[in-house]
Each structure stands twice: as C-alpha cells, then as structure tokens.
Length: 455
Ligand code: GLN
Image (cartoon, helix red, strand yellow):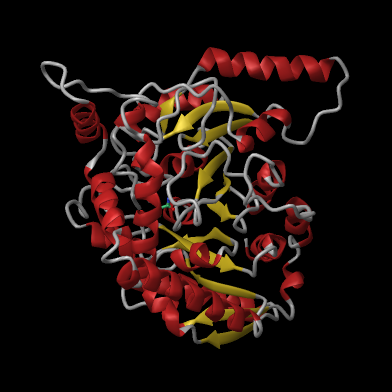
C-alpha cells in the first residue's frame, strides 16, 4: 500500500531519492515468512521505514543529497539502519534532503526540491524535508532523520508531523554521513508521538563504532508516551518559556497557536514559568561558525579519489586539478559557502576570534540551559518562527534560512533532546504549526510523556 502511495504522489512531492519496490517487497515477505514460522517478532516488524539519504545503506544508493556522491553504494549499513532491520523494519526508500544536510527547506538538494504535501508550492522545511513529507503524505509510517541544528524538528513543524532530536549520543552516528560531528544526531519521525517513540526505542543505544554514543540504560520512550496519554499527567509539570526564543520574527499565527497551547497546559495543571536565557541570542552566530568549521573538516574526504564523482580536466591535469574540478562540479553553492567559511574560521589568524569565541558562547548557552532546568522540567517554544514558505522565496539569501533555526539550534549546541509536535494551523495561511519541547540531557522520555499528553 505504501509503495502504491509513493507511485501515486511522489512524482509531485519528490520526498524520495531512491526506492526499490521489488527489494522492499522481498524484505517484507521475508518478515512475513518468519512470522508464519512462529518466530516472535517485535512490534515494528514488517513496518516500512523511510530513511534520510544521510544514512548509508547497502541496498540503495546513499548520496546525502549531493552530486559528489551520485550513485554511491555503501558496503555497510549505518548502525541506526542495522538496528531497524534487526527489529524487522523494511527500508522503503531513501529520502530527499538538503545537500549534506545544509539547509532549512530541502531546496539545496542537488536532485531538486521536495514539495510540502499541505501545499506543493510550499517548502517542507529542511534539511530532512523528504522524511517529513514521506510520513506526512502517508508514503511511509515511520522515517529516520538527522538533526544538527533542527533538521528533524523544523520539517516536522512545517509539515504537521512529529520529530525528535535525541540527547547527543543517544543514537549512534556510525554510517551517518557527517555534517558537524559535535552537533549531529540521528532521530525518528512519524505522525504521532507514540510512533516516534517506538522508532526511537529501536535505534537508541550504545555502539562501539561511535565513541560518542552513550552507554546508558535508556528507559522505554514508548512506555513514556503511553503513560502520557492521559492529559492529567501534565499536572504539576513546570514548563519554561524562554523570553529569547520568542524572537521578533515569530509569525502572528504561530504565536497565537503557541499561546493557546500554553493556556491548555495551564488548564491541565501545568505551571508556566518565564525563563531568561541571555546567551541564546548568540546561538545562531556561534552555530554558523562551529558548523562550517566541523563541516569543512568532514567534507575534506571528498577528494575525487575515495568516493563518488571524479572529473578529469581536459588533457588529464594534475592531482590538484582533478580534485578542484571534481569539487567545483560536485558541491553546490551552500556547501561551498560553508567550506570557505569553515576553513577561514579555523585558519591560524582567525581561530581565536571566531572558532574559540563560538565555543565559549556554546558553553554559556549550556549554562543558560542548566540554570533554566533548575527551575523547570521542560522548556516549550514554537519549533519554528514561521510556517512553510513558498518555494524559491529565500533564494539567494541564506540568512533567511539560517534564522528559521534560531529556536532549534540551542538544543544542538547543548546536546539536549528536543521534540516537535503539531499544535494546529496558523490562521493567516492554514499551514501547520509545531510546538517544541526540550528537556535536560538523558531526559528524552520526559518529552514523550509530555508530548503524548499535549497531542
Ligand atoms: N538548517 C540548519 C543548517 O542549515 C540545520 C541543519 C541540520 O540540522 N542538518 O545547518
């Protein structure tokens, strides 16, 4: 049924970069056979899973949305994918994304944009617009994404779906094509909080392939979501609202839905507490130094020798010539912009002024969160300041994209978990609005409990 749905709508939506109907059906049949043979399989066995193309898989190409990896086949599965397969989930396709996960609209994909299923003239958010639309448009019940600065949560908000960024290290990054290693986090997307939690449980956990993955006995997120199904569980919950996250650019219809959500929380017995986080206003600036710095280092491996594309200049050329022509042809404008920014920020003369100060700001933001969580259980904000915009309208002005992440970036800088869930539509355009909840590190279950109660 999901393959039929993809065949019917994906020509217009372009949520997928690769599918393999026969391969997916064969994998699903194999699960059926195991079940018929009496094997006890998990809750998600046989359920189709859409996989953001940032995660490498052996059964389909993995491009991270870039021409430089066109047709690339990985010899191994990312750990999150391997865990999903072990639980019986079936890969139904690789989803579209901004090139190397750099963007907020999926317009930076080298393979063309994904369209929002609410209105195909609108963007789905990014970088994981493909995964969000795949679940939102019923092309898949579950999807995996990656969140470095908001790429799971912001597309969830713009498409009326649910997405979670786990605590940093909660899910292995092994086999996730790296953007910024200290910020990257793999996480689940779905249409409900419980579905998101079920997928979270499958992919979470320590992995010796990723030294930053946490060796921690995670509680069941699904159990937390189920216990939150009763709104009475909100009684006594202290909810922080950070002044600095209610930025000037918040669209009136988004603000109205957010205020309504707070009023409903209060009506259920939650306590709303205003929080001052003075360093949050520097989060976007710090992020756009740290991310390009780490990305420029991570992307150095695309040298025309080890992976994907190779462009040879006329007459053969030198090693440098081949590398330079390959990168000129293989990387898109946003990727080049960030590589240049990052190498500059890391250069001897600017390191202290830019990279080091950005890391200091990061520490101050972590301290703001620590002070906030001494007063409240969760922090709530609009996931994104606006609803989905019209395709092409940010073209040429990356700042507009960057600022759409002002509300999601602080969680990545601090390594804490965040969850976005739909809270209705904005009156001015009828498009979905997301509520973001954040909790201290390791407290992902708290988000699922509160999220399920609000949902
Ligand atoms: N939009 C942000 C960026 O362009 C977030 C990206 C992400 O989370 N992968 O960097």
